[in-house]
Image (cartoon, rainbow, N blue to C red; front, top):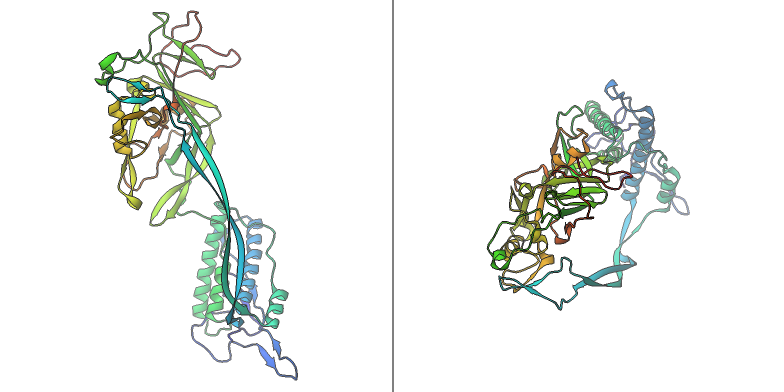
Length: 490
């Protein structure tokens, strides 16, 4: 048995500094076994002494650590180191009984859903391209939920621990303090990790200088590792004086409103004719207006409605396999419930995803450009862009389909983040470098845009309201109204 230690031992809490030095040789008379005396009954065993853990004072560079946090950590580290030593001794005297196993049984429950699209029986619309169309923008689904329970059993070796060791362990176990030295990602957490590293280095230096030892290298290593803070930190936290910060925009909900154009007659629909947005004016020469969620919308603008907007800033990096990616913490939730961004349809940036590669090497690339957005296609998609999306995305549909299902069509708008935040008019994030999408290469043309969901149901045609003559307004940001309920934009 390798049970340790001469009695009067002082340990330095991040390892073994002071009088406890680590020696990689095996000096004689330095490590004591438990004392066993034989009597007519069971042998009497004197367990090894418990080392005393003494933490060294930190230099002045750590004076910024709050005293309460440091005292809590020192108490916690001392208890962890002592308990680690005790556990190491128990493991050294445990005996595996290879002739028997212990079996553990538990119940495992699994719930899963199977969903099917409800069949569509028509009516179908057939246009100049000769293809039948399911014009629904949403396809109803029916889901069945199934639960199953299984019995899981596994076996393990049976181990035997001497009675004296179990009693000795229980009597000397040190409970951890109820306080928390530092929360994850807090400044105190980073400081405690630095203090731990400093003390560990001091331990190693002192151990090299000392010529005697009363603790074997294995137990010294076990105790040192136990003293490491368990609060989580990130790699490469950004400096506090960083001129530009990495930011990301979060959006809880999105809708688009537009003014539908007159349907293109006959073969014009199949001839890639440019749509004329803006709708027919119901009261020339004034534009059409509509009130949506307290905002007054005016033709011919397309309106992006972003709900629950929040901005997060990078607080460091984490390692995912061989890659390092930013980790974001919430910085600001925009107090305005809805931010609107009006645009002329010709100014809308579009994002086209392409699914590339296969299996674990698959990824999405995004090509972006201004122009080409067709709001009417969100209700009735021409065949060419519909099948183009099939080829690029490899989802939803196939190029040999004879029926176009409108709910499968995707058209993505790339919304300029700075333009969205300009309505909030804060300037708080003017120095941001926007990091919207994780990428392992330059697969996005722009990082300063938020790509809107491309489902057809997101784009809603706007109808005019009332018969009274509205005030003439231009394509400027919608105004949030108060008690008035609605007013024209200025």
